Length: 240
Image 1 (cartoon, rainbow, N blue to C red):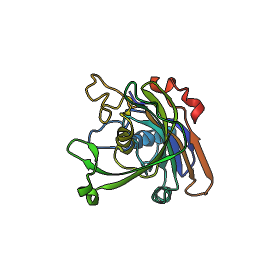
Image 2 (image 1 turned 45 degrees about the horizontal axis):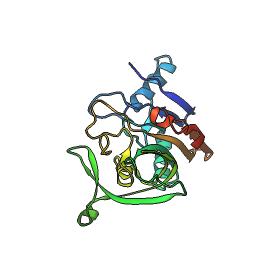
Image 3 (image 1 turned 90 degrees about the horizontal axis):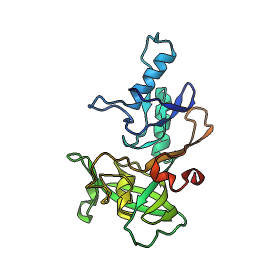
Image 4 (image 1 turned 90 degrees about the vertical axis):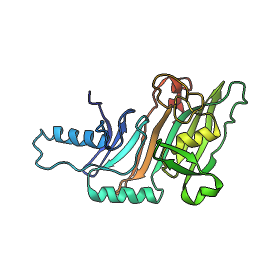
């Protein structure tokens, strides 16, 4: 079944949409559904299936397959180049909400202002996992930086807002596992869920995207409400 793609904004240069969880940001060797193919198919269908040329869709950033969230795709090469430049210059503001877990009986995380977190990360392709680099291997690793703040906390769970500065492989999930037990529902990095049976979806979503239009320069801002039971307990809509 082809997933429905919710488009938030579209013109001749870009498409801003919500990537569903379970869908790849762009294609890989698995042949699974990916956003680039789905958006291309949508454009062809809207053209009545008579397009003589395959539409252009350029992926300029990514979300993990099992993470839902706001994404922007380019419809022209020029828009793709300009969006990529904005990302390199850290001029695209990406914000996330995550529900994190911590041990029962542990002191609740304190609500407050933004806290910086910086690590050096190594990606192990053999097991598709990222790890914090030891001091002796920092020269081989990628710098990973984000800011986070605790918005609300209760027994064993906290709602955290995250501003992502660098976009490393599994960066948020790994760094949250260093600050807390990890993102609730994350079977790869959260010690609470590593032995869990069944399939879980991390309580992590890209909920806001702010940037200047790559061609017109107009300020654009998009927000969505996260879904899932872990978010419901915090009435997350009021935190965006």
